[in-house]
Image (cartoon, rainbow, N blue to C red; front, side, top):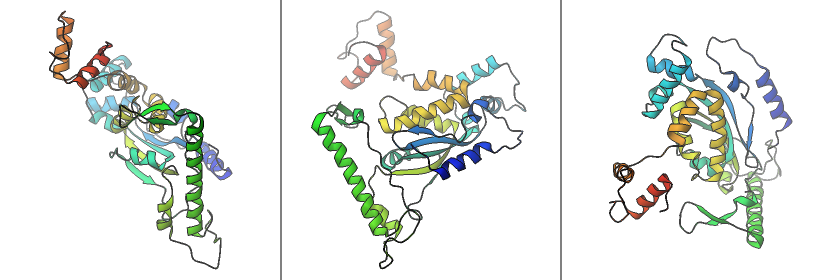
Length: 312
């Protein structure tokens, strides 16, 4: 991901700016402010602003007047209690704002998480950049035969080469036609003064879904963790998962005690139904339980066996 000279200058000015504040700040996150974390081939995330820290969560839970009213170990224990018992409002007291550059098809998945404030780059007002997501060879996978939402084996040889060619050709051709319909370059100058161009809001319909877009995405800590619980999961689509994994790094710099509890109780945890819990207790008591006598469907049984580390 290469930044233009103008972007580099803007970034340098943002990083150089200083302001006095009485608000709590987090040195580890301050060091990350404005700095792009490169993702995929042309994407990135960067933190633009934030409010609150671990102490803000504790302060909200206790409705206390100041910071540091209890020992750090007690604060950590309270945060873990809140996480363990699925409390939400104390975590809503912290907020963070990201600048994200991502392929349009990833953005359409991402926007399903509705508890955020979003402002996207407008192709009604501006010309889109000539940047497209082309997967790395190890991400060119066939459709899974057992999972309608998943990938199977990685394509190889001529099949992979043909797919890569098609992706590049289609994206390039669609963008060339987009520019031809607009009859203008990225600066807004007419390419052919003798003819009119199509309105930007109409010309954009021709762009491929792997075209990159950008947005500002602001959310609170509670909803950020809901996003990460789903999108940082191993079953999430790779292209959105890489963004979630980078945001996990941000979470750990920003609220380390919350991030620790999140990894333990949400990201690395499993949920057992009442039936699953009963079967687990019976197994621990030494009873031999099989799928036929469990009351679980075959799929539920397989999931339980995977959770328990047993052969399904």
